[in-house]
Image 1 (cartoon, rainbow, N blue to C red):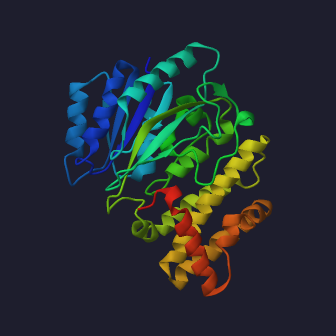
Image 2: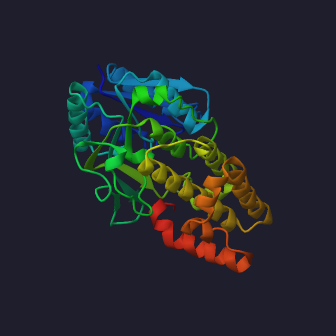
Length: 339
């Protein structure tokens, strides 16, 4: 039985995918590495994937599909996963191999005992180009360490501390049970990947160790601010899907409900401030329409977000207000890892 399935979405990734794959191979027969070649055409991504499958036939599986975007590659990974747990590692990122072995050992213990968890969380590192001092995203201020816990036991997350795709491992069955299906040809769907399963999570486990290296700094990277503004319609699409999921949903656990509202608050802030930073009247109208969309979807949720600290900052009137909004974004930019 495979303990952990890891999907690596790849699109023209020959320059960096080997480092990613090599960091996972020490997991040995307990791990399943699903290299999803998402219609790569300009380089040797497909051939590299096949070569790893040939060399490690019981560990690596190369999957080739027509281009569907990052979300469709993740969907394919979930559909093909045979491991009890599932993780996504982007092809330009990598993991700490020693921590990987520790995680596999912990997952084995949890599976064998009465406390099979739905979500396993660890730390990640912003591995930014040219930055010697790497920022680490840790959760020990809000989560019990190295034991099974529930939402009721979780403390409040500080601003900028969110459970992102880099930090999470989900139980594979839960991802299928909750009906997770990411949209095709859309960037930034990692937020949906983390957000939508949350109400189905009952038991969690947090390992206070730096597992995931989130590489950031390439000019063509999806989180480059200029590229994000150019793809703003995709960011808005993700934002609206998250709004639709949250609208009218009765989440009884107060801590989980507050956390999900805070998560949606930050995603809506990101959408709003990027629309403002573009400086165009068209995008300013899109920002207004996004907030109206939220208002129509769930009036109570709208007022919660509209009157939050970030919501107020994003909706100050006039050109002066826009400048204040952008200044607020620049102050909090370090939390989100934009480059």
